[in-house]
Each structure stands twice: as structure tokens, then as C-alpha cells.
Length: 322
Length: 246
Ligand SMILES: Cc1cc2nc3c(=O)[nH]c(=O)nc-3n(C[C@H](O)[C@H](O)[C@H](O)COP(=O)(O)OP(=O)(O)OC[C@H]3O[C@@H](n4cnc5c(N)ncnc54)[C@H](O)[C@@H]3O)c2cc1C
Ligand SMILES: Nc1ncnc2c1ncn2[C@@H]1O[C@H](COP(=O)(O)O)[C@@H](O)[C@H]1O
Image 1: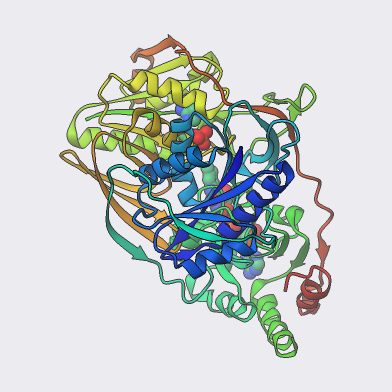
Image 2: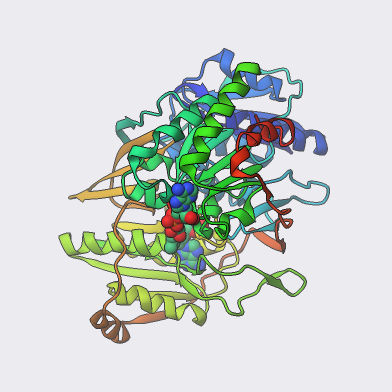
């Protein structure tokens, strides 16, 4: 018995969510008194991968020639390594890559998979996890009935905690099988130097209350002073006021930042589904009856066009002193 | 083109969520059920567009009890040719995927399509499981799909951008926003749906690998702390000293 963690990488870098997944796996391994193994794909440097050691990683298997566009090859390699190290618990960050790969591993190994896990696993008697259901409106406790359990961890749910490991990077050397998918092109969004939304700790978001795309200058300015990433409601991206990658909610991205500031957004249930796991929510809206206030920690009933400029000044003053 | 679309039943997004039987069952009283949006708006409609352009057929498959029939009829009203329901409780994603794979395995579908996730269980896994079980290429979370001959070209949103992927039919994909525009069934479609075939088949052997023990609701949020708009600047200080997030 041991724990295997998939450490996600993108563009030759270890993702923030990988540190969290490794730290999560390390906790299980220490609770259950077993070993922790890590597998990573793509061209992240050894130095970068060794950084996972700070979160408890020991053996790190790397398969350099497989990238995130090949879920089958990744799943084949993971299945092979899982067999080799006798993994009974597999931890995967349930991001775009995890969603592509983990179900195939589940099918290949006949291992149960629970996705959207938001808390540490209870491994005292079998494996029990807590997952988010009904788009964040409730939780379920789920028990595994399979020999191998795959945990699909929601990014930013438990955070990464340091734990000493003695990492050693090894060539995974698996028989990965054929690449069946060809990557034709990668289109990069211009994020304007912002942290990508799924990794952002601070988010400033705005909705239809802002009236038109020409009014986003103040939203971008507030975000930039705070070091936050900008987001928007669905109608705003549907109207092309803002780029599609900013759309959060049920049909867009689900995020869990430390701070979510919602400006001129009503707080429809489908919007909340993507943001209600944020640690602190601030709502700025002219309508005191806006449903968003029920989900908020702090609220300002007021006109965004008056309130946001004041916040910009206050944030500038705060940054100058801190 | 022969296309199979997996259709699931989900509570309407505005449903009030509560539980019964000692928090072990979802309380369906007063809940309106819909076709899971990703299955309907995106997977099914794109399947119909591909059929309209290239000929072929679109079959839907649902794992569930007779309570799923109304949403299956809706899929038929939107334009699916015929429907299959595997008569079994959809106990977990592995079980559901086993049923779909078992049905699809010898029927030579060019495309098997699922939604990117169900809005109740939020698994995002049935598509990948079916691909794994049928050993077909898997295109996950696809926002755009074109097929020319036996070559499929698809766009997938990734962190910070998009990828254009290409692979050969047959394949399995999961559909996300952008792949098609919602279609509202018209009277003719609704009438025609009554005459279409909804075949009910018994479940193949298969097992669930996970089991829900119980449910819980998030702790009630304490009341919002309101700040006078005149003193909006105070918010920044509160976020620093009280909430400790900046
Ligand atoms: C199946 C389904 C899926 C959906 N998925 C999503 C999703 O993923 N994400 C999403 O966001 N939506 C989604 N929606 C749409 C959702 O239901 C709402 O329609 C949408 O979130 C509303 O966007 P909004 O709050 O920006 O606009 P509105 O509802 O128009 O709200 C604008 C708000 O701005 C306030 N306002 C106006 N002027 C000002 C001002 N000067 N200063 C401050 N406040 C002001 C108003 O009081 C109002 O509350 C979905 C809907 C469905 C049916
Ligand atoms: N009971 C079911 N019957 C048919 N298809 C399903 C069922 N459950 C899920 N699916 C399909 O699988 C997709 C992903 O579901 P999930 O993995 O549960 O999030 C859905 O969007 C449907 O297309």
C-alpha cells in the first residue's frame, strides 16, 4: 500500500495545485503510515520538481515525453507506476488535466474515483472523502468500495502545507502507448500579466451593473493595485464586453480565491455556483435586495461609479503604507 | 455519422437543495427536473448539427428509472432520432459509464458525446470513463467540434488559453459551453417526439465503486457586514486587519 500523486505541470512548470496535491497526499501517507510517490509529465526542470520535496514528496517519477494533450498516455503511465509502487490511493488535482486523465485511470484500474473533493480524507477505516455537490450548494461524504481509491481534489480547497521530504527525480520509463491526439495549435489568452483565475488569491469581478465595456477601466485599476485578477458574470462575457476566460459561474470557471469582490453583479444562483467557495466575499450593488448580499461577508449598498473610485484611492493609500 | 449522446436528468439550477432520511437522500419534493444543461445545450445540439450536415443518426442514452422519461422526451423533441434508457439507478459514475460502454461497444458509433459534468453530482468523469472502457481517444471539455471525413478537430479550454486538437473517429468527447446554441423544442418537435422510439433495456452487470454516506449543507453564512458608501474606504482597512485577505 502507498500513495501516488499526480503533480500537474503546464508549459514546463509545476502548477500551484501540484504543491497542494502533494501536500494532501503526504498527509494521507503520514496518517496511514505509508510511502508517498509522485508522478509528473512534461518538461518541468528537475529543480522545479525538487521543490515538491518541501511538501513531502520523495520519489518523483517523470515522463518527459508525454504532455497534457494526451490523457490516454498519461493514464497508461500512471496505471503502470501505480502498479509498480503498489498505490492504493491516487491523488489528482481535479483541474483540466485531472478531469481528462483520472477517469481513464479509474476505468483502466477499476478504481473508484470521487471528484470535487474539498477536505482531507479519512483513512482510519477504508477511505472516506467529502465532496462538493449541487454546484457548491451542498456536500456529500463518499466511501470507496474499490481496492484502489482515486481522489480528485478541488484546487485551492485545503492549501499546501510544508512537510519535509527527500525528493529524488527518476525517469518513469513507462510504456505509454500511441499518441492518438495531435495538438495543432495553442492559442494563448493575453492575461495582461495577471495571475490566471484558477490560481488567483484575489479576484475583482464585475457584472452587467457596469453598463458597458468602456467602464471597466476602474475595475482593472482596482484589480491591478490589489494584485488581483479580473473576472465577470456570464452576460458580460456573452455580450463580449469582457473575454470569455473571465466568465465565472456554473457554466464558466469555478474558483475559490481568498477574496472575491463582486461589483454590479446580482448574485444569481448560477453565478454563485462558481464563487461561493471564496473565503471572503465583498458585494457592491445599488440594490439592497440583490441576492448576492446573502452570500457576502462585506457589503456596500451603493453606486459602483461612486464607490469604486473611493476604493481605488483607499487601496493606493494602503499599498503605499504596507 | 452515427452519434450516441449521454443524457442525464438534473434538478433545475434554481432548486432548493435539502435532504431527507437522516440526510442520506436528496429531497425531490417540489424540485423541477431538467436535461442536464451541458448534455442538452451543447452535446445534443452539436450532434444534431453534425447529423444535419453529414447525414446519419443521433441516439440518446440515459441510465435511470422511468422518472427520467420526461427529460428523454424533451431530448427527442429537440431532435434526437431515438432514445435508449438503461433501467437502473445511476448509483455512481463507474456504474453509469459501464452501462453506456456495454451498450455502445458493438454498435460502431462514430462519436459518443457526454456533457462536461452533471450539475448535481459534478463528477466530470463519465466521458473519460467511457473512453477508457471502450479504449477510444478522449477529447475532454470541448468548446468547439468539427468533423471532416474521419478527422475530428476540437477546441479545448485550458488554463490561460485554448488548444486545437485533432484525432480520428471513433472517439468520445465531453461538451462544454460554446459548442452549440441552445435549441427550444417547437410544437412539431414535441408532437414528433411522441412517435419516436424510447427503448428501455435492462442493466448489464456492473458495479458501483463508490457510495454516498450522507449529505450536508454548508454552515449558514453570518450576516453581511454593511459599510456606508460614504466610508467605502474603510473596506480596504477591514479586508486587511479583520478579514486578513490583503
Ligand atoms: C443554466 C444557466 C447557467 C448559467 N450560468 C451562469 C454562469 O456560469 N455565470 C453567471 O454569471 N451567470 C450564469 N447564468 C446567468 C445568471 O442566471 C444571471 O442571469 C447572471 O449571472 C446575471 O449577471 P449580472 O449579475 O451581471 O447581471 P444582472 O442580473 O443584470 O445584475 C446586475 C446587477 O447590477 C446592479 N447594478 C446596476 N447598476 C449598478 C451600479 N451603478 N452600481 C452597482 N450595482 C449596480 C443591479 O442592482 C443588479 O443586481 C446562467 C443561467 C442559466 C439559466
Ligand atoms: N445517469 C446518466 N445517464 C446517462 N448519461 C449520464 C448519466 N450521468 C452522467 N451522464 C453523462 O455524463 C456526463 C458527465 O457526468 P458526471 O461525470 O456525472 O459529471 C453528463 O453530462 C452526461 O452526459
